[in-house]
Length: 460
Image (cartoon, rainbow, N blue to C red; front, side):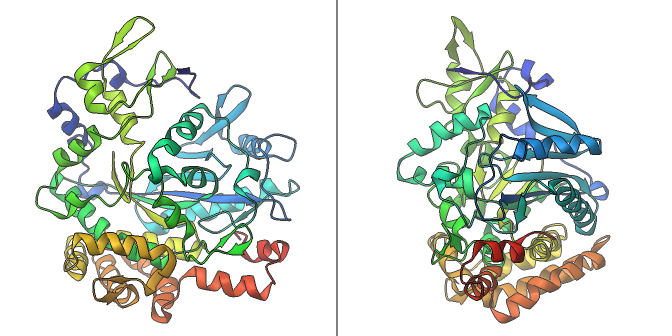
Protein backbone atom coordinates (compact mmCIF):
# COMPACT_ATOMS: atom_id res chain seq x y z
CA UNK A 1 0.00 0.00 0.00
CA UNK A 2 1.46 3.37 -1.04
CA UNK A 3 0.48 6.60 0.71
CA UNK A 4 1.88 10.05 0.00
CA UNK A 5 3.46 11.72 3.07
CA UNK A 6 2.89 15.29 4.12
CA UNK A 7 6.36 16.38 3.04
CA UNK A 8 9.41 14.78 1.42
CA UNK A 9 11.91 13.15 3.72
CA UNK A 10 15.12 15.10 3.13
CA UNK A 11 17.81 13.52 5.23
CA UNK A 12 21.17 12.00 4.39
CA UNK A 13 20.19 9.10 6.63
CA UNK A 14 17.84 8.03 3.82
CA UNK A 15 20.86 7.11 1.70
CA UNK A 16 22.71 5.35 4.53
CA UNK A 17 22.02 1.59 4.52
CA UNK A 18 21.91 -0.34 7.79
CA UNK A 19 24.81 -2.76 7.71
CA UNK A 20 25.25 -3.70 11.38
CA UNK A 21 23.58 -3.64 14.76
CA UNK A 22 26.42 -1.45 16.05
CA UNK A 23 25.35 1.19 13.55
CA UNK A 24 21.89 1.35 15.14
CA UNK A 25 23.43 1.73 18.59
CA UNK A 26 25.77 4.46 17.41
CA UNK A 27 22.73 6.49 16.36
CA UNK A 28 22.11 7.08 20.07
CA UNK A 29 25.78 7.66 20.84
CA UNK A 30 25.84 10.44 18.26
CA UNK A 31 23.13 12.37 20.14
CA UNK A 32 25.18 13.05 23.27
CA UNK A 33 25.46 16.69 24.36
CA UNK A 34 28.03 18.25 26.75
CA UNK A 35 26.55 19.23 30.07
CA UNK A 36 27.09 22.95 29.50
CA UNK A 37 24.82 22.74 26.45
CA UNK A 38 21.95 20.79 28.03
CA UNK A 39 18.50 22.10 27.16
CA UNK A 40 14.88 21.22 27.86
CA UNK A 41 12.27 20.81 25.14
CA UNK A 42 8.54 20.97 25.75
CA UNK A 43 5.61 19.57 23.74
CA UNK A 44 2.12 20.71 24.69
CA UNK A 45 -1.24 19.51 23.34
CA UNK A 46 -4.64 21.03 24.00
CA UNK A 47 -8.17 20.15 22.98
CA UNK A 48 -10.22 22.70 21.05
CA UNK A 49 -13.99 22.80 21.51
CA UNK A 50 -16.93 24.99 20.58
CA UNK A 51 -18.51 27.03 23.39
CA UNK A 52 -21.18 24.31 23.51
CA UNK A 53 -18.54 21.63 24.09
CA UNK A 54 -18.87 20.16 20.59
CA UNK A 55 -15.73 19.17 18.65
CA UNK A 56 -14.35 21.66 16.12
CA UNK A 57 -14.27 20.48 12.50
CA UNK A 58 -11.13 20.73 10.41
CA UNK A 59 -12.87 22.32 7.42
CA UNK A 60 -14.79 25.55 7.05
CA UNK A 61 -14.17 29.24 7.76
CA UNK A 62 -14.18 28.65 11.53
CA UNK A 63 -12.44 25.26 11.51
CA UNK A 64 -9.05 24.12 12.71
CA UNK A 65 -7.30 24.56 9.38
CA UNK A 66 -8.56 28.14 9.21
CA UNK A 67 -7.08 28.75 12.66
CA UNK A 68 -3.79 27.08 11.78
CA UNK A 69 -3.50 29.19 8.64
CA UNK A 70 -3.85 32.39 10.68
CA UNK A 71 -0.47 31.70 12.26
CA UNK A 72 1.17 32.55 8.95
CA UNK A 73 0.38 36.18 9.81
CA UNK A 74 2.81 35.81 12.72
CA UNK A 75 5.76 34.67 10.63
CA UNK A 76 5.13 30.92 10.60
CA UNK A 77 5.89 28.98 7.40
CA UNK A 78 3.59 26.11 6.47
CA UNK A 79 4.21 22.52 5.39
CA UNK A 80 1.18 21.42 3.43
CA UNK A 81 -0.48 18.14 2.52
CA UNK A 82 -2.71 18.92 -0.41
CA UNK A 83 -4.51 22.21 0.26
CA UNK A 84 -4.14 22.13 4.03
CA UNK A 85 -1.33 23.16 6.41
CA UNK A 86 -0.24 20.18 8.51
CA UNK A 87 2.64 21.87 10.31
CA UNK A 88 3.91 25.41 10.72
CA UNK A 89 7.40 26.52 11.69
CA UNK A 90 8.82 29.71 13.17
CA UNK A 91 12.44 29.21 14.06
CA UNK A 92 12.57 26.09 16.23
CA UNK A 93 8.90 26.28 17.23
CA UNK A 94 6.52 23.91 15.45
CA UNK A 95 2.71 23.87 15.43
CA UNK A 96 0.67 20.89 14.27
CA UNK A 97 -2.67 19.11 14.66
CA UNK A 98 -2.97 15.63 16.15
CA UNK A 99 -5.35 12.95 14.78
CA UNK A 100 -8.45 14.31 16.56
CA UNK A 101 -7.55 17.95 16.05
CA UNK A 102 -5.56 18.41 19.27
CA UNK A 103 -3.41 21.52 18.77
CA UNK A 104 0.26 20.87 19.56
CA UNK A 105 3.20 23.18 20.18
CA UNK A 106 6.67 21.64 19.98
CA UNK A 107 8.65 24.49 21.49
CA UNK A 108 12.27 25.23 20.73
CA UNK A 109 14.71 24.03 23.37
CA UNK A 110 15.61 26.40 26.21
CA UNK A 111 18.10 26.48 29.07
CA UNK A 112 15.45 26.22 31.76
CA UNK A 113 11.83 25.36 32.43
CA UNK A 114 11.24 29.04 33.07
CA UNK A 115 12.38 29.72 29.51
CA UNK A 116 10.03 27.07 28.18
CA UNK A 117 7.23 28.52 30.32
CA UNK A 118 7.69 31.92 28.68
CA UNK A 119 7.47 30.31 25.22
CA UNK A 120 4.33 28.39 26.15
CA UNK A 121 2.59 31.39 27.68
CA UNK A 122 3.38 33.47 24.61
CA UNK A 123 2.04 30.70 22.38
CA UNK A 124 -1.21 30.46 24.33
CA UNK A 125 -1.68 34.22 24.07
CA UNK A 126 -1.17 34.05 20.29
CA UNK A 127 -3.50 31.08 20.04
CA UNK A 128 -6.27 32.77 21.99
CA UNK A 129 -5.93 35.96 19.96
CA UNK A 130 -6.07 34.19 16.61
CA UNK A 131 -8.99 31.99 17.71
CA UNK A 132 -11.01 35.12 18.48
CA UNK A 133 -14.23 35.08 16.48
CA UNK A 134 -13.88 31.41 15.45
CA UNK A 135 -15.68 29.96 18.49
CA UNK A 136 -12.68 27.74 19.28
CA UNK A 137 -11.76 27.41 22.95
CA UNK A 138 -8.77 25.42 24.15
CA UNK A 139 -9.22 23.63 27.44
CA UNK A 140 -6.68 22.16 29.82
CA UNK A 141 -7.01 18.42 30.41
CA UNK A 142 -5.68 15.06 29.35
CA UNK A 143 -8.85 13.88 27.60
CA UNK A 144 -11.61 15.54 25.60
CA UNK A 145 -14.41 15.87 28.18
CA UNK A 146 -17.33 16.51 25.82
CA UNK A 147 -18.33 14.86 22.56
CA UNK A 148 -18.42 11.16 21.77
CA UNK A 149 -15.60 9.40 19.96
CA UNK A 150 -17.61 9.15 16.73
CA UNK A 151 -18.33 12.89 16.82
CA UNK A 152 -14.64 13.82 16.74
CA UNK A 153 -13.41 14.21 13.16
CA UNK A 154 -10.32 12.43 11.87
CA UNK A 155 -7.37 14.45 10.65
CA UNK A 156 -6.89 13.12 7.09
CA UNK A 157 -3.09 13.28 7.34
CA UNK A 158 -1.73 10.15 5.68
CA UNK A 159 0.50 9.08 8.57
CA UNK A 160 -2.55 9.04 10.84
CA UNK A 161 -4.53 7.01 8.31
CA UNK A 162 -1.93 4.26 8.60
CA UNK A 163 -1.93 4.33 12.41
CA UNK A 164 -5.74 4.32 12.40
CA UNK A 165 -5.73 1.00 10.52
CA UNK A 166 -2.76 -0.54 12.29
CA UNK A 167 -3.23 0.05 16.02
CA UNK A 168 -6.71 -1.45 16.64
CA UNK A 169 -5.50 -4.73 15.14
CA UNK A 170 -3.01 -5.35 17.95
CA UNK A 171 -5.41 -7.54 19.95
CA UNK A 172 -7.04 -6.40 23.18
CA UNK A 173 -4.11 -4.06 23.73
CA UNK A 174 -5.29 -2.00 20.76
CA UNK A 175 -8.93 -1.72 21.85
CA UNK A 176 -8.70 1.96 22.82
CA UNK A 177 -6.20 3.05 20.17
CA UNK A 178 -8.67 5.37 18.46
CA UNK A 179 -9.41 6.99 21.81
CA UNK A 180 -5.69 7.65 22.24
CA UNK A 181 -5.43 9.15 18.78
CA UNK A 182 -8.57 11.28 18.77
CA UNK A 183 -9.28 12.35 22.34
CA UNK A 184 -6.14 12.35 24.51
CA UNK A 185 -3.83 15.30 25.15
CA UNK A 186 -0.44 15.20 26.81
CA UNK A 187 2.47 17.36 27.85
CA UNK A 188 5.93 15.93 27.15
CA UNK A 189 9.36 16.97 28.42
CA UNK A 190 12.60 16.24 26.53
CA UNK A 191 16.11 16.28 28.00
CA UNK A 192 19.63 16.08 26.60
CA UNK A 193 22.14 13.53 27.84
CA UNK A 194 25.94 13.58 27.93
CA UNK A 195 26.78 9.87 27.66
CA UNK A 196 25.26 6.42 27.53
CA UNK A 197 25.53 6.07 31.31
CA UNK A 198 23.83 9.44 31.76
CA UNK A 199 20.98 8.49 29.42
CA UNK A 200 20.51 5.11 31.10
CA UNK A 201 20.28 6.68 34.55
CA UNK A 202 17.75 9.26 33.31
CA UNK A 203 15.61 6.52 31.78
CA UNK A 204 15.80 4.24 34.79
CA UNK A 205 14.74 7.04 37.15
CA UNK A 206 12.12 8.25 34.68
CA UNK A 207 10.46 4.85 34.40
CA UNK A 208 10.70 4.34 38.16
CA UNK A 209 8.80 7.52 39.10
CA UNK A 210 6.60 7.87 36.00
CA UNK A 211 3.48 6.63 37.80
CA UNK A 212 3.96 9.21 40.55
CA UNK A 213 4.22 11.98 37.95
CA UNK A 214 1.12 10.67 36.14
CA UNK A 215 -0.78 10.71 39.44
CA UNK A 216 0.39 14.21 40.38
CA UNK A 217 -0.76 15.58 37.03
CA UNK A 218 -3.91 13.48 36.54
CA UNK A 219 -6.41 15.81 34.82
CA UNK A 220 -8.88 13.79 32.77
CA UNK A 221 -11.82 12.59 34.89
CA UNK A 222 -14.66 13.54 32.52
CA UNK A 223 -15.56 11.37 29.49
CA UNK A 224 -18.59 11.87 27.24
CA UNK A 225 -19.73 14.65 29.56
CA UNK A 226 -19.83 12.45 32.67
CA UNK A 227 -17.44 11.51 35.49
CA UNK A 228 -15.69 8.37 34.31
CA UNK A 229 -14.49 6.96 37.63
CA UNK A 230 -10.90 7.69 36.56
CA UNK A 231 -8.55 10.47 37.61
CA UNK A 232 -6.58 10.10 34.38
CA UNK A 233 -8.65 8.50 31.66
CA UNK A 234 -5.80 9.34 29.28
CA UNK A 235 -3.54 6.99 31.25
CA UNK A 236 -6.28 4.33 31.25
CA UNK A 237 -6.52 4.55 27.46
CA UNK A 238 -2.80 3.91 27.12
CA UNK A 239 -3.22 0.62 29.01
CA UNK A 240 -5.11 -0.63 25.94
CA UNK A 241 -3.11 0.97 23.14
CA UNK A 242 -0.56 -1.51 21.78
CA UNK A 243 1.49 -2.65 24.75
CA UNK A 244 4.09 -3.90 22.27
CA UNK A 245 5.32 -0.33 21.91
CA UNK A 246 4.15 1.47 25.07
CA UNK A 247 4.19 1.34 28.86
CA UNK A 248 7.08 0.42 31.15
CA UNK A 249 10.12 -1.46 29.83
CA UNK A 250 11.08 -4.00 32.52
CA UNK A 251 14.69 -4.26 31.36
CA UNK A 252 15.19 -0.53 32.09
CA UNK A 253 15.41 -1.34 35.81
CA UNK A 254 18.17 -3.93 35.50
CA UNK A 255 21.91 -3.83 34.94
CA UNK A 256 21.49 -4.84 31.29
CA UNK A 257 19.90 -1.47 30.38
CA UNK A 258 21.97 0.24 27.70
CA UNK A 259 21.70 1.75 24.24
CA UNK A 260 22.14 -1.77 22.89
CA UNK A 261 19.32 -3.18 25.02
CA UNK A 262 16.92 -0.41 23.98
CA UNK A 263 17.86 -1.00 20.34
CA UNK A 264 17.24 -4.75 20.75
CA UNK A 265 13.75 -4.01 22.05
CA UNK A 266 13.02 -1.54 19.26
CA UNK A 267 14.19 -4.03 16.61
CA UNK A 268 11.31 -6.39 17.36
CA UNK A 269 8.44 -3.89 17.58
CA UNK A 270 6.21 -4.09 14.47
CA UNK A 271 6.63 -1.15 12.10
CA UNK A 272 3.91 1.16 10.79
CA UNK A 273 5.61 2.07 7.50
CA UNK A 274 8.76 3.26 5.74
CA UNK A 275 9.23 6.15 3.31
CA UNK A 276 10.40 5.56 -0.24
CA UNK A 277 10.55 8.22 -2.96
CA UNK A 278 8.60 10.69 -0.84
CA UNK A 279 5.75 8.25 -0.14
CA UNK A 280 4.76 6.09 2.82
CA UNK A 281 4.92 2.36 2.13
CA UNK A 282 3.09 -0.08 4.40
CA UNK A 283 3.57 -3.84 4.58
CA UNK A 284 1.11 -6.64 3.72
CA UNK A 285 2.05 -8.46 6.94
CA UNK A 286 3.74 -7.63 10.24
CA UNK A 287 7.26 -6.33 9.69
CA UNK A 288 9.70 -5.74 12.54
CA UNK A 289 12.74 -3.57 12.01
CA UNK A 290 14.91 -6.64 12.57
CA UNK A 291 13.20 -8.38 9.67
CA UNK A 292 13.43 -5.28 7.48
CA UNK A 293 17.15 -5.06 8.19
CA UNK A 294 17.85 -8.75 7.66
CA UNK A 295 15.49 -9.53 4.75
CA UNK A 296 14.41 -6.26 3.15
CA UNK A 297 11.07 -6.06 1.33
CA UNK A 298 9.73 -6.07 -2.20
CA UNK A 299 7.85 -3.02 -3.51
CA UNK A 300 6.84 -2.44 -7.13
CA UNK A 301 9.37 -4.96 -8.37
CA UNK A 302 12.27 -3.44 -6.44
CA UNK A 303 14.00 -4.95 -3.43
CA UNK A 304 14.37 -2.38 -0.64
CA UNK A 305 16.61 -2.59 2.41
CA UNK A 306 16.69 -0.79 5.75
CA UNK A 307 18.24 2.67 5.98
CA UNK A 308 19.14 4.82 8.96
CA UNK A 309 16.23 7.09 8.05
CA UNK A 310 13.95 4.06 8.54
CA UNK A 311 15.50 3.57 11.98
CA UNK A 312 14.98 7.20 12.97
CA UNK A 313 11.37 7.09 11.77
CA UNK A 314 10.70 3.80 13.55
CA UNK A 315 12.00 5.21 16.85
CA UNK A 316 9.41 7.99 16.59
CA UNK A 317 6.59 5.40 16.45
CA UNK A 318 7.48 3.81 19.80
CA UNK A 319 5.54 5.11 22.82
CA UNK A 320 7.00 3.89 26.14
CA UNK A 321 6.56 6.11 29.19
CA UNK A 322 10.19 7.18 28.71
CA UNK A 323 11.41 7.25 25.11
CA UNK A 324 14.94 7.40 23.72
CA UNK A 325 15.51 9.28 20.48
CA UNK A 326 17.76 12.30 20.08
CA UNK A 327 16.78 13.18 23.65
CA UNK A 328 15.31 11.32 26.62
CA UNK A 329 11.57 12.03 26.56
CA UNK A 330 9.29 11.92 29.63
CA UNK A 331 5.83 11.11 28.26
CA UNK A 332 3.48 10.22 31.12
CA UNK A 333 1.61 13.47 31.91
CA UNK A 334 -1.88 14.72 31.15
CA UNK A 335 -1.96 18.16 29.53
CA UNK A 336 -3.60 19.70 32.58
CA UNK A 337 -3.75 23.23 33.97
CA UNK A 338 -0.70 25.26 32.98
CA UNK A 339 0.74 25.76 36.50
CA UNK A 340 0.59 22.00 37.04
CA UNK A 341 2.19 21.18 33.69
CA UNK A 342 5.04 23.61 34.28
CA UNK A 343 5.45 22.20 37.78
CA UNK A 344 5.85 18.72 36.33
CA UNK A 345 8.45 20.03 33.88
CA UNK A 346 10.39 21.53 36.78
CA UNK A 347 10.03 18.28 38.71
CA UNK A 348 11.52 16.32 35.86
CA UNK A 349 14.38 18.76 35.36
CA UNK A 350 15.28 18.68 39.04
CA UNK A 351 15.22 14.88 39.07
CA UNK A 352 17.15 14.07 35.90
CA UNK A 353 19.51 17.00 35.20
CA UNK A 354 21.21 16.76 38.60
CA UNK A 355 22.94 13.41 39.22
CA UNK A 356 22.55 13.48 43.01
CA UNK A 357 18.81 14.08 42.77
CA UNK A 358 18.53 11.41 40.11
CA UNK A 359 20.12 8.87 42.43
CA UNK A 360 18.02 9.97 45.41
CA UNK A 361 14.82 9.65 43.36
CA UNK A 362 15.81 6.14 42.32
CA UNK A 363 16.57 5.15 45.90
CA UNK A 364 13.14 6.42 46.97
CA UNK A 365 11.41 3.80 44.81
CA UNK A 366 14.02 1.11 44.11
CA UNK A 367 12.35 -1.20 46.63
CA UNK A 368 9.50 -1.96 44.20
CA UNK A 369 9.37 -5.20 42.25
CA UNK A 370 8.56 -5.34 38.56
CA UNK A 371 5.09 -6.70 39.29
CA UNK A 372 4.45 -3.89 41.76
CA UNK A 373 5.48 -1.25 39.22
CA UNK A 374 3.12 -2.71 36.64
CA UNK A 375 0.30 -2.94 39.18
CA UNK A 376 0.81 0.72 40.10
CA UNK A 377 0.66 1.75 36.46
CA UNK A 378 -2.68 -0.08 36.16
CA UNK A 379 -4.05 1.48 39.37
CA UNK A 380 -2.97 5.10 38.86
CA UNK A 381 -5.55 5.99 36.19
CA UNK A 382 -8.39 5.28 38.61
CA UNK A 383 -6.84 6.04 42.00
CA UNK A 384 -4.33 8.82 41.31
CA UNK A 385 -2.22 9.58 44.38
CA UNK A 386 -4.23 7.02 46.39
CA UNK A 387 -2.60 4.23 44.36
CA UNK A 388 0.23 2.31 46.00
CA UNK A 389 3.71 1.32 44.97
CA UNK A 390 4.31 -1.75 47.07
CA UNK A 391 3.37 -0.76 50.63
CA UNK A 392 3.67 2.99 50.00
CA UNK A 393 0.84 5.29 48.92
CA UNK A 394 1.93 7.48 45.99
CA UNK A 395 0.92 10.63 47.88
CA UNK A 396 3.50 9.70 50.54
CA UNK A 397 6.18 9.22 47.87
CA UNK A 398 5.28 12.37 45.92
CA UNK A 399 6.12 14.73 48.78
CA UNK A 400 9.74 13.59 49.29
CA UNK A 401 10.14 13.28 45.52
CA UNK A 402 9.26 16.96 45.16
CA UNK A 403 11.79 17.89 47.81
CA UNK A 404 14.48 15.88 46.02
CA UNK A 405 13.64 17.74 42.81
CA UNK A 406 13.70 21.13 44.54
CA UNK A 407 17.12 20.43 46.05
CA UNK A 408 18.37 19.21 42.68
CA UNK A 409 17.19 22.36 40.92
CA UNK A 410 19.01 24.56 43.43
CA UNK A 411 22.28 22.88 42.44
CA UNK A 412 22.05 23.52 38.66
CA UNK A 413 22.06 26.63 36.45
CA UNK A 414 18.77 28.59 36.35
CA UNK A 415 17.39 26.13 38.88
CA UNK A 416 16.24 28.58 41.56
CA UNK A 417 13.76 30.16 39.14
CA UNK A 418 12.54 26.72 38.07
CA UNK A 419 12.17 25.59 41.69
CA UNK A 420 9.43 28.19 42.23
CA UNK A 421 7.38 26.42 39.55
CA UNK A 422 7.11 23.38 41.85
CA UNK A 423 4.87 25.22 44.32
CA UNK A 424 1.47 24.43 42.68
CA UNK A 425 2.07 20.69 42.53
CA UNK A 426 3.70 20.68 45.98
CA UNK A 427 0.49 22.22 47.36
CA UNK A 428 -1.58 19.52 45.66
CA UNK A 429 0.70 16.78 46.98
CA UNK A 430 0.34 18.09 50.54
CA UNK A 431 -3.43 17.72 50.20
CA UNK A 432 -3.17 14.37 48.45
CA UNK A 433 -5.10 15.81 45.51
CA UNK A 434 -4.54 16.04 41.76
CA UNK A 435 -6.09 18.39 39.19
CA UNK A 436 -8.81 15.81 38.47
CA UNK A 437 -10.17 16.29 41.98
CA UNK A 438 -10.53 20.02 41.38
CA UNK A 439 -12.10 19.38 37.98
CA UNK A 440 -14.66 17.06 39.54
CA UNK A 441 -15.52 19.71 42.14
CA UNK A 442 -15.99 22.24 39.32
CA UNK A 443 -18.05 19.78 37.31
CA UNK A 444 -20.51 19.24 40.13
CA UNK A 445 -20.65 22.96 40.95
CA UNK A 446 -21.57 23.69 37.32
CA UNK A 447 -24.10 20.86 37.16
CA UNK A 448 -22.06 19.36 34.33
CA UNK A 449 -22.94 22.28 32.02
CA UNK A 450 -20.30 22.34 29.23
CA UNK A 451 -20.75 26.07 28.59
CA UNK A 452 -19.90 26.88 32.21
CA UNK A 453 -17.08 24.37 32.46
CA UNK A 454 -15.34 25.52 29.29
CA UNK A 455 -15.04 28.99 30.78
CA UNK A 456 -13.44 27.44 33.87
CA UNK A 457 -11.14 25.01 32.08
CA UNK A 458 -10.12 27.19 29.11
CA UNK A 459 -6.43 28.09 28.92
CA UNK A 460 -5.84 31.70 29.98
